[in-house]
Amino acid sequence: MRSRFLWSAFRWARQAAGPARRHVSCGSLPLEELFARGGPLRTFLERQVGSEVQLQVRRPELVAVAKLLNEKEQELQETGHLLHDENEDLRKLAESEITSCQKEIAQLKHQIILLLVPSEETDESDLILEVTAGVGGQEAMLFTSEIFDMYQQYAAFKGWHFETLEYFPSEIGGLRHASASIGGPEAYKHMKFEGGVHRVQRVPRTEKQGRIHTSTMTVAILPQPTEINLVINPKDLRIDTKRASGAGGQHVNTTDSAVRIVHLPTDWH
Image (cartoon, rainbow, N blue to C red; front, side, top):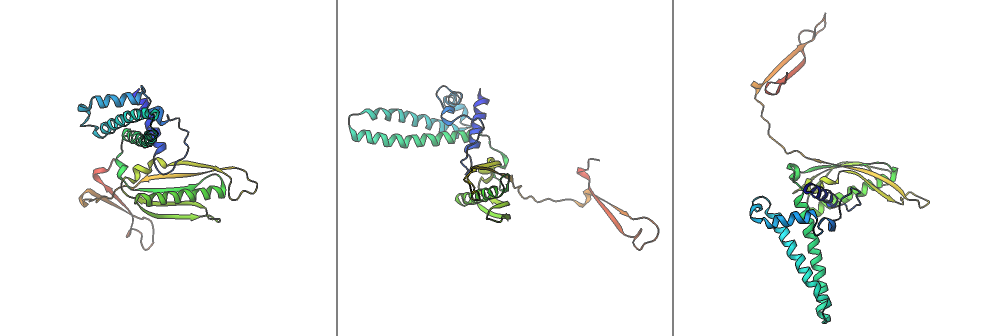
């Protein structure tokens, strides 16, 4: 049961992460259904809060957010009774408090989902972004250009470094292919779920009869490896040289025309 709701939470976080708010048909449960009373996720959180002493060492942040969620939901329930009060001013104040409380509850639920998703070693890494137009001709290239611009603006919003590495535009302002280097705190963590095929259904700018077309483009997100200083001891190298053989020729038997370098500690043969 626990693995079932964690997988649902993981798929919901994958859909919600990053700048693109698009429809994803992944069969994930809606947020409200995940947190339904008596459901597996709600039961799990209640157990964690109940065993707070044992869990503080491992998941203190999750416990704190789960407790805050319970408090806000209780506050929402108590404030809801004021909606039936005879005092009109009190009812208006209650409506304002309920709206604010509902927003906080939604944010806390979203935070819990992200805390349940396991972190990766590459979450702190910078990344390489690649976008490529797919099916749809010029419209797909226009869509690719819009997506690339969206990621560039998202990087600026997050305060990340964005450097365009390749950019191949189309004839009418679209984009055939482009790549960029993005660097900043947790850049890969926020962008890693953006990879895949994206599609758009709309009336293209090039369409004369008002028909809806479906176009696609692909996004690739690759973590940048961290730079390391590699030191190779010359004693660990075996250098083999070969010379050409045969009759005649100025360089025959005198020039090392083939050189092979073997690193002995990692040689499997």
